[in-house]
Image (cartoon, rainbow over all chains, first blue to last red; front, side):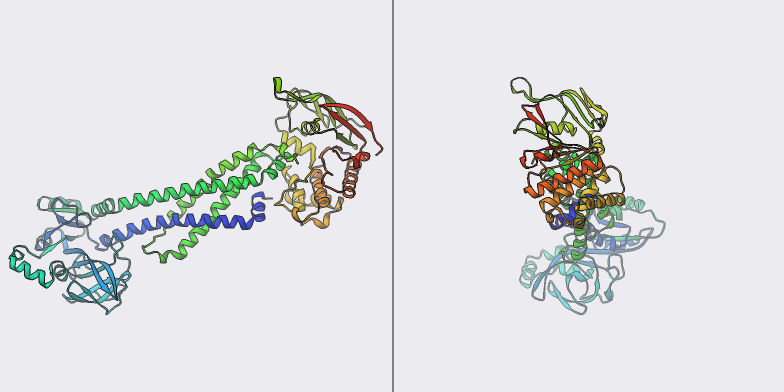
Length: 378
Length: 233
């Protein structure tokens, strides 16, 4: 006869209501972990989508995701001519605010060379960019449809293809255009400003053929570390392997968000522990007379402890299951991507069980102190 | 006459020390034989509940000896470390407010005592139904405590007290919450249990209506057994 289940059945409404509240809390914890995973995947998605081995950036910088990096555009040919290089492509990144269907959309515009590393990876709908001007591939999260036109800067682009799950670390959808269009977008000025710059005659002094990075795909068998060391000797350039670039991105961009989310998750778990502890304590106090009676008629301590611990574990189990189901059902409604990995859910479940055991400690302590003689008092 | 199942010799119990010391029991000697129903009466604070707690191995005396069913259980100290096991084995308890577990139904409230003693649920249930039938409340076996009348609840509580065939039943004011008719019925049941099962029943009571139902009534005053009156059963 399982006393814990019997007691739960007797107070089912109250128990389920408590579980519901707790499930929301645990659902939020799971969502926080999912947001963190989503943040990593979104942030690294663009870097990984390039499918290259080496990133060549401005000398002394850590690349376009960490800080400003400007490389002369003609360096791409020099890099491509190096031993061991299968292909090299120049890329330019810039954040753009565009008007779309009456709303302002913030986009990360990637300028890349056609059929070179850095261009849009697998297109889920439509086709790759084939024309050198005014074609775009947008991530589905941008809300653009195939064939739709969007104005970026002073030019209008036709969406010819769509990608999926390709956003910047800030969650902005990625739009690919050709490098030439991107450079024009970067340096185009409004007519009045262009006239002013022309009058100052300073515009001619700078070249607009600059890119943010050159992405290098190596031939099979070529050691990326060795290639990086070779490029580093050029002084005006820095080079990083793909793994190093991912580390830089996650350290410099994601680290603070990771700490923030980690802190919130820890706080929520502490709050959950306190809530479970108080609920179990209250449930124990409510059963004081029953526990005294059980002790008096001869129930061993392990039976009393079992009653309290099993209820705490049942509460944790039901709340976790409900919280996980809730988040699984609603994760598509979150503005940022939620990545729910089974390993995270298993880990959190383990933590919840430990939390329940800790939280039941107060109830167990109280129960063990109950004097069996109190069952005889009135 | 059979050997007593409860034997107390010069048992004393006090609370506190020095000027705050209260002597709850003073040199109490008592024999209770199987098949008898014994009453303990006395004014409030006379030591009735303390005596019941001592016999029930809930309170440790300060002096004296105590035997339950022939086993020496106290001789200046408890001789058995597992007092709950001792209670489970030898003693059944009946309370003033029945103390049924609110989350178990009638038969489960009886069976729980049996399962605590190691019986399987099937055996415990069979035993519970047998006892409910014996006490005339089998038709209420699935009722929750909140659905039972005072008399029915007390019968279920008696069934629970008998679940492990104890040699001693301790009842604390079992009729206090009942009217005279139901109180009489409960005392009849306790008499039946004592007679048919050779159980010693010790009842703490203030209820004058049932004084004539005891084989003996012991009067406690200031912690001492003052007088013993023989009653017509």
